[in-house]
Length: 314
Image (cartoon, rainbow, N blue to C red; front, side):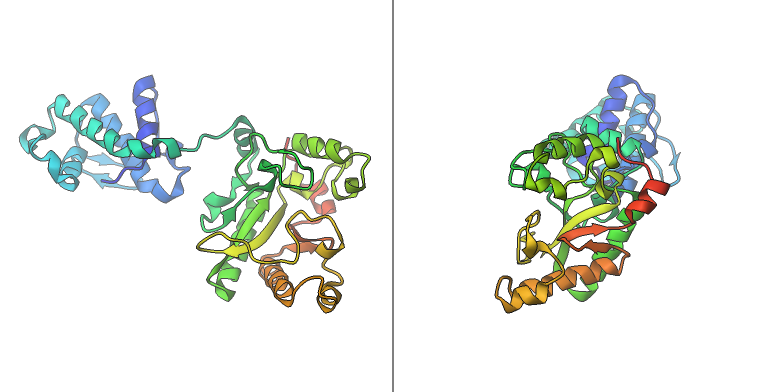
């Protein structure tokens, strides 16, 4: 019997509120699907004082406390088997023991913000839930971007349209095939229209305005969850590779056209050109097309397709 802190707390909240919780409500943590169901059913058993066979679509187990006792030998003296299925005091001792084991991870649990919950309700998916191996470092959660401001105050999760997210997973697989030591690193993904307006207001009337889609014109593909800003990084350390410019660099050296000339003039290195080409190869294999003025920006659909067939993120 294995427990994650998320599973234990989800079940604990259900017990505290007397709410009815199903396994599906905690299956967002896909990597611990089985234990999520076990934890919920375990707490439900405690509430009902019933420890009989508990079937589910994932598992069938008998006497969950006996299974837990087997996995935690130190409890054998505390919870004698002859009392295991009947003594509620012993049941709560086990629960207390489980919570104590899980407490160190309490501070690591990530709570979704109102913006993130809103994006999820509109059908967009967390990239990390689709492929946990993909690195995420959203640049607009920090001030070191072209605006010099923090734009994502309550958005720290990278979302995409489900089809675009599935394609990004395919791109990661292609990259791993070519270079197992590398990973994609997402720097920006789906962007609510409200944030797009904030970004446009920052650059309105400046030379940078040409790089930001005007919300009045429908915004850009980031606002549909159909574009991603991505670079390459070391799969183990997360350190980004040399790409000639930083992500979000607004200038000619970020352009795809003329890269060979940039190398010849020693404005970017041959290594940087090779890394850009590798990134484009992996993304193209999944159906993404690079934006010619930004080596890091890739579109999964055209703007015309997006406006005709998809909805913007509110």
